[in-house]
Length: 84
View (tube, rainbow, N blue to C red):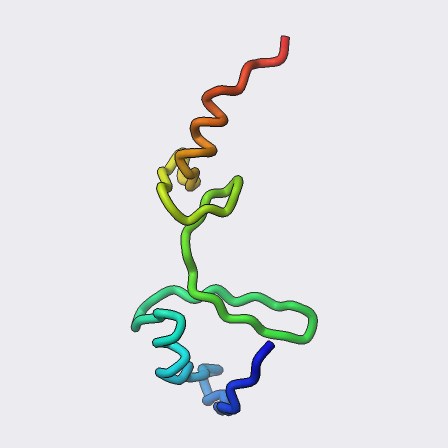
């Protein structure tokens, strides 16, 4: 993990401003959703990108029963044969 040397304080509402240089680097615009992860003692922020529930692909997505599935996984599912 690389330190940016930038330090920000948490305000009275628990907010932290992400510096514009970092937002630009990760293509984060105003109102973009951000995912928050905890990894041991680390808090990780990641720009939310919808992805396939099976393979994690973020391209060629379609919705099925409110779940996102990519075209490749959809094709693989359609080729499944039932157990007899």
